[in-house]
Image (cartoon, rainbow, N blue to C red; front, top):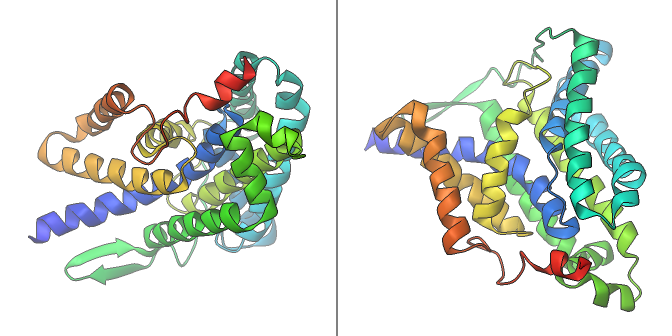
Length: 296
């Protein structure tokens, strides 16, 4: 029983990491219909932002959230406005542009850091708490709490604010939203900025756990794509619970099957969901086609 509980706890905490990265990716994917290959690099840039705040200002990474997250929002707005928006008529070119951004961000950071690994120390991250006989680090509990609060806050934002309602309207039918007076292009810019800010939140909270490197974003984004498909396109709840499911599958597969095969197991589930239910567990039927059909 203790072993089973330990696996569940580990799986949920790992799922919190995947869910936190996936929420911003799912928002961008669900609204703008861009497969943002550079999302992992946004997480990576935020991790280096946390390191920079610590190295220059002496800030704990959990305090640097208040600097890095707004900065990532601004970066997201600039990237979409200057690079992606001019390519709006060619959605396939937007995909290639995000892949180009992936290479650009990685190589710029590689040139600046010369490939040297960095770490971001935090007194809070080194603490552990006991859940029965199970010991868990505070840093992972903070991530789990953060993804839960972020999912709730984003849901309330989309449901109860005018900007959020505009985002939902554009997600459902961008042509009808345009006819109702919604500035679709501005909504896209804001959405990409929010998605980038969420990637920034993930990067800052992950920085005390991992050694920083230019390619570290790839460790999270593949799982995040699986979470997006599993949970459902554009669904905040789908990104949250999808992350938990992927984390649990990885934990159980790693313990009972083979740690080397744990990612292969949830990729098999990812492919099965694509075949059986393309909308994902929490997605609406037809949601995966709306944006592409309207662009045609």
